[in-house]
Image (cartoon, rainbow, N blue to C red):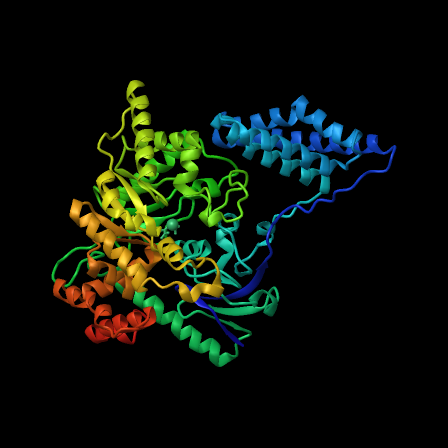
Length: 589
Ligand code: PEP
Ligand code: MG
């Protein structure tokens, strides 16, 4: 049986199924204990505190040994909070006076403390909320015996089949055992998709109820290029699949050895860079000719860790990014995007519960309301800039105030470093992502305030079309060539050109040969994408001249009134196929 889904990350895999079911909320009972049993409940609580203390002390000593330094402040602070008399007596009061069970008493105490911390003006205390979350979770785990770590059950190479995966769940999976992803939900720009692309693993999203159609251990064929999954294939289907696998391998191998990425037929050059998720190995960036890091998704430093990375750890990570960029191509730059948290990129303990997280306190908004996190990250990037070329990029900017305020914070941090004699690159470029419609509409104003733009089409399409990028039910509205999106992209490019600042596209549409080349035709000078997609786009660009691009840019405009985004895509695809017939029947266009 073959099930069709969305082609999410190119490539093919054959293997046994591993059905991933999430970690989720810890289910806790809440009840009133019988009169006279309060002491017993207190005993349970004390045992849970003791077990949590042991866990934390164990973790601290392992970390001290592993890192070779005493950078374990966060967990020492957790120990102190855990041992805090006020908190302990509050739990005891709920148990003894209200006769609540220990789990409910812990939750109520944590909720009360959280509310208090959140009300405080001091950002330091507001950020302690995440420490409380962590301690509460540990205590509840100890009380309920809840010990579910689904990623630990994956012990041999398998195709991960899941309803949906958060970025945190995805990064926790042991990479050596993941052959690919088949998902009920998700879409081409959901985060599991981006990670799959970064890891050069095939993925198919939007498969509906694949989790209930397969059983663990069953063999499936995963075709991420065409978006299909075959369950229990017969010999003929398996043989056809083998042919597809071989063709793709040959194609990528041939592309890897060609002209430098982004070189056009007439010698024109488009800068092609790689998108990088820290902590996730970058497959193919060097051999496919990436010339820098166009998007460093710094939030993965948070998603990958149990706790907030320290300034030193961040600085080290950004220095490594700069080193990596330099290795890709001498003099090239690593574009560090500030913490883009929120929406579906939730970090346990940091992210507040919001009823509409995609429109909530996320990205630059989060940073401006958590100044200490922002200042630490800016300090780390600036310090790293003394050792290699980096640029700063602000995520999800929607109004000029955010850019003005961010500039003030940056200036302040620079003064602080200067006063302390810490070296940094004083000319470090600062740019903005253009990924919400208001940013594109404000682009002329923004261009006065920053040194470069990078268009994030994943979010720009999501917010323009009001279509959740992770929801397969509205995946049909992921239309980068919708005239509304194209107008916003054109406005952004015009504003950048007017001020003479560079503009790139770092959303996944850059990797689609039809759409990515269209952005170039409209005047974008740089594309940044998952490295494994570079050979394909390079091959298409290598067959085109400047004049071809000028002609290509007009293709959607020449369609009759009433034409759809689908028509625009088909017309562009047909134009490219006619222009480059040798690529027509391959997997490229
Ligand atoms: C985008 O929105 O296009 C983008 C590149 O950022 P992310 O996918 O990380 O949200
Ligand atoms: Mg985005």
